[in-house]
Length: 107
Image (cartoon, rainbow, N blue to C red; front, side, top):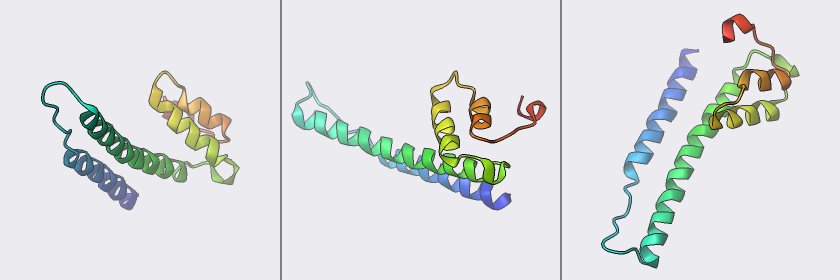
């Protein structure tokens, strides 16, 4: 388990490094088309960095679920992605994907 924590911590460090390297382009005065395109490129690069991290975390979580072969890995991954929007019962969704939890532990 310590190896997984190091891997997750490394992924987190890589995310922070990537974000800190992505300086937003300055806009002087009113934005023109080049400014807007530069900002759009900046947002796309930020989104890509965050999604690499999210995909890693989701994948690592699904791989570490103690559900055996009976879990639908695709549904489990979707449940974890959906949980990012908040107000979502991720445990219930994972149970629907075939994973069973001891509710007293999950609560």
